[in-house]
Length: 159
Image (cartoon, rainbow, N blue to C red):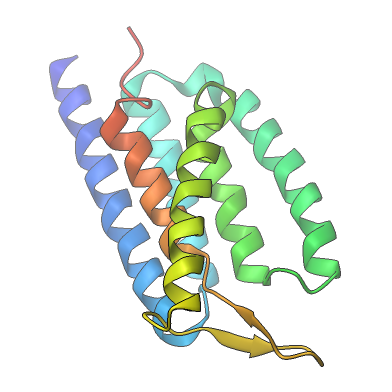
């Protein structure tokens, strides 16, 4: 079983790399590719199998579905992009009910810092809508929050 734990940790490392790539791409192009969302979902399933957390998959998927439905409201109001909806959905798939609160706290902190950096002109912002309100890419904050979950040990292999 120790080999499966090492493979589960390697899966977390691969996931962190994919998240960092998505964050950099979103920072540069304000776009999150569907292939990355699919890859993050596949890595979640692999990690769940390798870490023995596969019985939690229905709960994680249920939470991700609820979050997706809620985020679609904000998308319909043009308050967030479609890529952000997809990435948040897969992030909550990773977090699941057991890690949702730490994820939400980390995401709030990271997004707040990122918004402040955008306001100060340290990172690029996108101007959208008739009122040209600023919009920051959300993937860097989501990536930092999910990687934070990994570092906190929230997704450690099941006992």
